[in-house]
Length: 455
Image 1 (cartoon, rainbow, N blue to C red):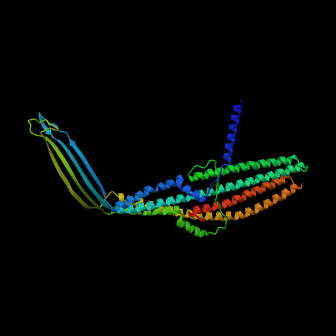
Image 2 (image 1 turned 90 degrees about the vertical axis):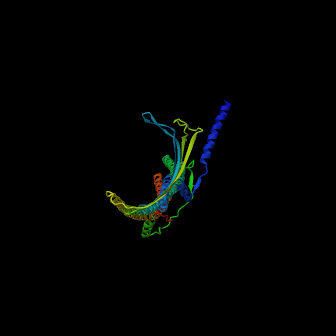
Image 3 (image 1 turned 120 degrees about the vertical axis):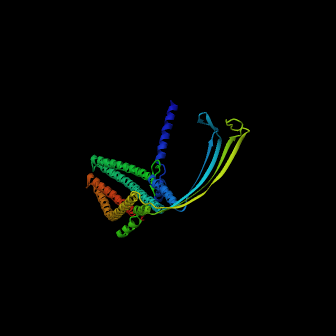
């Protein structure tokens, strides 16, 4: 019995120690630069775009090499025929000797046409478009990481504010209890303050859970599992400064540097080369080919021994070896298509239509960039001005709470008046923190619209 009791206490103490260790696990510090680097190395969506570059680079290399170098191939073969008799009918038979043959051949082919020249330009432009796709995806990823990093900072600030609210609620509860002890207030005030304290505790728990949720969201963007427990402290802070940007300069910068828009323009270059390639099908093509080879043949025959039955390897077997060379065969020609049932006309029409559609897409994207930059810039100005208003509201709400607290302490105010002032002060604090981080999110949104970092 005593052994079981001791074992039970050991298990309980071990669990308590484990829980305490988990709660006291050191927080992991994470800077924004480290978060961006982890995301570039591990985010699946970004790495998918990076992997799409490899086939584009291979096609660009292939089109360049094939333009200046011929193709070459080597072939060879071996044949074997078994010795025997071929029945010709009417009792006639023809002896078939055993033969072995070995040959090889070298072939070289080169063709220069307008299509091969256009393909080089097309695949080079496609490679540039792939690079711009990667840059665009990297911009989207970095912006998303910055926004989530700011969300984590905001969640931690709200959690700190909730902790401060709990302390205020405890002060109100202590004040109500003290007023009740001296007979100035009733138990209703104490119970009302206890309910307010409980609500503050719940808000603190919810804000702490929200911090953990933001950590999980951030690490999902980074492409790696979140630490366990998800206790991460962002180390970077961002100052609030008056925006010094010019809307026109931001729009011009976005039209020049926005990676998504640059990707569209690179694809327009590929479409131009595609049209040139379609037109080049009307031009002649220069062709060159050359071949060379050798062969060896062995024939196994039987010496005249009065029988037609072949003997594979006997003392009277005669081996006849023949060697030869397929001399160099060089051909230089010019091919000019004359009529192909208007297939070239169809290819040209399709290529021109695709280029026209892409030009319309570029125009649409330019309009979208202009609208996005202007809207993000106006949102940034509004967010900055809101901070000053929220700061004044917070100061006024804190003063009102101080006055309500003094009125309640001297007995001239009610618990409802005090709690209303406390709620107003808490909401003003929450609104101020939200406005500050809305400002930082607005900068991140503006960076995404422009396609370049602005701070």
